[in-house]
Length: 174
Image (cartoon, rainbow, N blue to C red; front, side, top):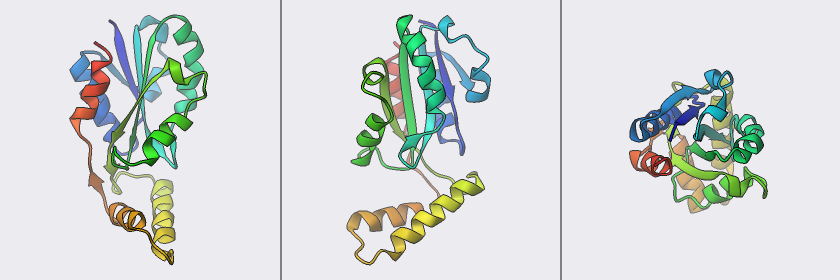
C-alpha cells in the first residue's frame, strides 16, 4: 500500500508523530506546505496530522476539501490531531467528533495524540492565547479540580507525547 503522512506542526509535536508514523509504516512523510503540490490520488492511504487549537484542528479545512474525491476513489483516509490535553480528557472525543460532519465522519479514521506545550517554539499569537486562558482560569472564583489541573499544566512547557499513539495510527496503514 502506497501511503503518505502529511503534517502541519507549530512546535514540533505533530512533526514528531508524523516521523514516528512514517517510520513505523515505512511511508512517505511531507510537511503541509509541500503537500499542496502532490497528487493525492497517487496514494492508497493519506494520513493528515495537525495540531489542535481551541477545540479545532488547524489546516483541517484543506484536508476536508480532499475527502470527496479521495473517498470516491477508495482511498484510506486518516486524521491524527495533536493537542496539549491528555488522551483521557473527556473533551477529546467531543472535539474530534465536532471536527467532522455526519457525512465525513464514516469516511475518515480519526486519532488523537497527546503532545504538550513548548512555549519556546510557540508563535506570539498562540502564547498570547495561552496567557489569556491561564489568566481566565486563575481568576475564576470557584475553581474546580479540573481548572486547577489545567492551570498547572499550561503554566509551563511539557511533553506528554508517546510513540504508542503513533503505533495505533501506523497499524491502520498495514
